[in-house]
Image (cartoon, rainbow, N blue to C red; front, side):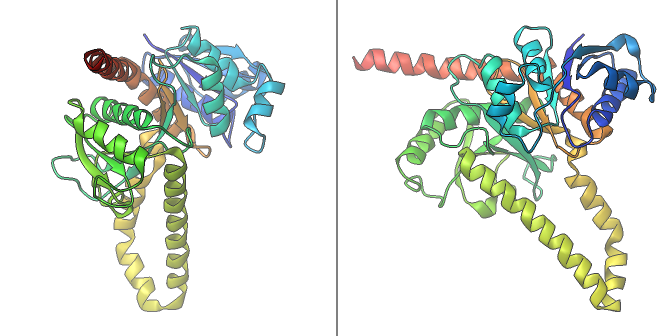
Length: 349
């Protein structure tokens, strides 16, 4: 029976929505949930909803690192912040996975400070799940882009390990038998992008684990060029924010068009069913959240605006990642690479 630590104070609607998400899961599954946060506020929220109390524990944490705080300063001044306490549960083996809808920076930093990394991994990766065009031999409409902000700059081996992380997550969570992996670059040629990207390309191309398809350009991301696309955190974060901005522009244009013409208004009404389906496909509440990979246990970053359903799905994804041993597969891949590299160095000497 897995125990999932939930940062009850993280998110725009905390503690109400994290607590309600946990309550929902307690009625639907046999998972144990540790709600980390202010006990009085958590108890007050639990009293408002149906839940299975035997599956919910409350772990006290009086403070929270807010979105508008600098993560490092917040964590240093609040040693009992909910995200730190939850991270300590994970590090001590008192929880099998962690879920938070709070500050991304605080989650990444608290995890780096407290939770052990997979041996050999020096940099973590935050993976974004995003919808694409239909991909060949893959019914799943979502792909994975990593890193999108946990690590700003990367070495070639970091990018290779990100590929291992994406491969493990896509194969075990999305159930893609042999996920395709692409390296985000400014051109398809192996010589594009400078020395580090060229070396990363070579490492991925030569790795027997990966189904590497080569470099992927920016327009290949929404087209579903690969199941997993690897990039530095700086590039991935800019890409993600650009996509979010374009989505907002299209929403604004749609509202504008709706007001300009009766014909357009009629057309939008006819399309309303399809637009609702599109919203369902792109709704983050359905896939729960973004995995923070590279640590010995699963960590899921839920959207800051997550409601109970989204938090509940994030908890279930965290449990699934634990059950399917995503972190163990990443560890095996990294260990295999280091063993091969050690053998090559030994033969070369």
